[in-house]
Length: 264
Image (cartoon, rainbow, N blue to C red):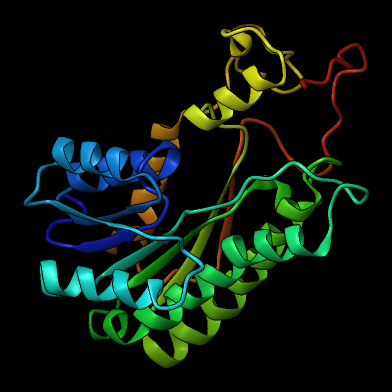
């Protein structure tokens, strides 16, 4: 198995992409720390994965000492820490008119500063095992949609953090830092958001080809499959890399002229 005996922290793993990554990591032989805000969901995930393979912490990722608690829990439960997946994120719709400073600060705290804090707290343990960090970004980091302004900026900052630390920590600590930028993924939260916008329950069944050339959008399990490579030893010394995971080129793309439908 590709992650045999590795100990991995995965933030925001009670649902969605984080949960899918946790499940795939355990399938590949790892033990995981589940993290989120919903204790009922965390218990369900741990029971599904097996209590010998998973433990959980319920805590706001931005609170003081949350990062240290996650590291301590991993080391206490599994004897070491091999990898961190920074997946927890605040996905907030906002543009320049609707974004005030408190909202902007909150999004940056969750999406950029909390990952930094966890990397810093985990570094001594990761260095012992020549471990790795995988940041989960977004293709919106490249500029973002008009109504995802604060979120997009936070993911752009995370991308720069990945490239900066991917160089520095590899040279100085032997720790790799990489990032994957998922495109449009059919998570539980995304499905709920679209329903709240007034779309029908199966809104994802017939999306315009401009947004889904394959006829569907990505699944959390497909992001998880890609994550394993970056967490496994098979990715070797590769560090400081950002990979977009989408079904079409995100930069410099020329969409079909007859396809102008934009999803809500």
